Length: 423
Image 1: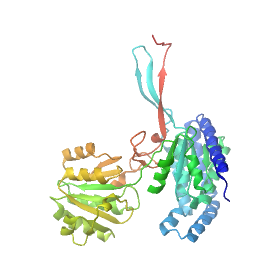
Image 2: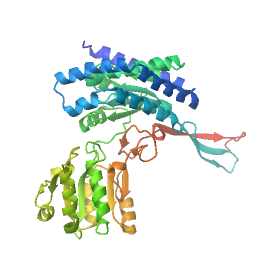
Image 3: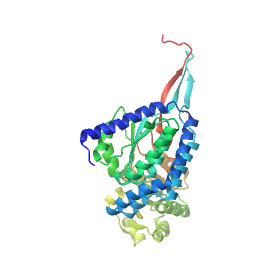
Image 4: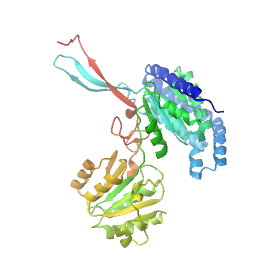
């Protein structure tokens, strides 16, 4: 049932204020207490698995009636296996080191006091996301372990699934003696609820959108609260003239086909003209054998006639599919110029055995992750040793790249004195 604008505002503000109270309460919790909560939450999800599948079936049936795509239906569906994976995710976060309270750079001053920084929670984090219900549990676990209360706003297509997950997690928080406000869910479908959420500067401290470019742009354009995001992943691999060509083929193949629907999959392959005739036939044949459609520039088409002609607009596209742009470049300078013009500052890689070129590529390519002789698919919190992640940021302030537990904290200055006063 639709509710009016004033009721939406009061509803959303009430949820956020409840989270603010929860955040203050969460400051009292030590690592052991937070870890125990996450472990108990994991078990509760397993115990209530049948209930979750029942509620999820309502969302799946509604999605079928709306004729949503097979990919969307797959992301939406909860199974026993996926519920177990959610529970394992909570347990894995519990096992990670707790960043809260870590003291950094403690240095003595001439007057005898010591000045340093302490890692502390951000406070209240708002997560706005689309179809996948597992994000509800993943985001909650990461936020809580980092000492933050969370306000969740999932997509309307998963509202029953998300509500059921949140209710289980909140009930467990209450049983473990936590303020229930540490987890809040905006469980009304109206779009205005998101817009009201984005106005709550001073109550919600950070917004993290997870979803397509349209969602992220809407959030960024309407938010009064700082937003951590990436719009899209237009990722590149540059195959240098000094590359090991077999290595290059395997790196590029993995970057494109291992999981093409992800933001860190390669969308454009750049190849030095010196090795193009030797490299492109074997690389593009391997791509086509995996079902990849090839869009090539004029030189690529001369070498590999099966390629379709690439357009200027194609270079800006995030396909999230088995489609690849290929361009032959005069050398590293042209490759880096292409990345600077068409890339999204997400993930870019060079394949080369030339140390000087590799180091220059690291310095000059301005992306959240820059790799040497490695697939773009490796830009991931788990692969980088951060454990779980809440997303990848292409922003330059506060967090850049995979956002793990440390990126969900900030620092404050601390001073250890013995009676010092300012003269």
